[in-house]
Amino acid sequence: EAEVAQSPRYKITEKSQAVAFWCDPISGHATLYWYRQILGQGPELLVQFQDESVVDDSQLPKDRFSAERLKGVDSTLKIQPAELGDSAMYLCASSLGDRGTEAFFGQGTRLTVV
Amino acid sequence: GDSVTQMEGPVTLSEEAFLTINCTYTATGYPSLFWYVQYPGEGLQLLLKATKADDKGSNKGFEATYRKETTSFHLEKGSVQVSDSAVYFCALFDTDKLIFGTGTRLQVFP
Image 1 (spheres, rainbow over the protein chains, first blue to last red):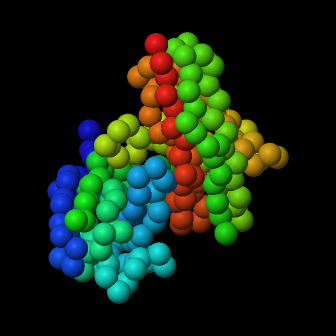
Image 2: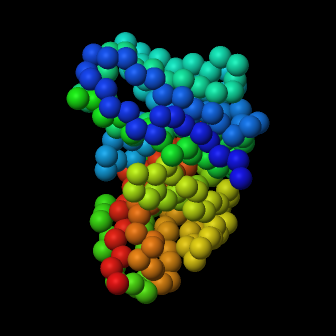
């Protein structure tokens, strides 16, 4: 069964360091989402891609976060410099993008900033 | 803007009890509605969905009906099991945005 791949699964980094997460969506899925989920809360959208274009990055802290999906397939989310408050689960999801189709999620990357 | 509101948890039940988790939404258009489930340390998995008014989504004994008149999509299960213990998220997809509620933790005890 096709699934969304994310790596690493866990990441511990010191504050002020750079960190990057990778996501490989399900083949053929044009829409890719990056969500941040703080413990005990729901996922919050950071950035949404349609193919290689950014559709929505209004909630992405652009002074320290960046995201790219250069060939419209896999994607990288970067944080530089990391802050203590960035500790969270980072979830990637993909979908066909049509109204009635669901988003499929990866297992997430648990980031701890110390 | 669009939003989803869920009942606060945790919801604590004994095995075989009836479950209801309330979800209401606000949307400018005609959204598709979803319930996702998240087990500890994992990503979200789709549980069920409904794409138009009066549709009923169902899966693994869970059901939810898209009620346009009350803007609701309540999750129900007739007899919960310990293995149903997880966090449940209600979500909507409107135009091109997928928006989640804050989640409701379900704890089922033997």
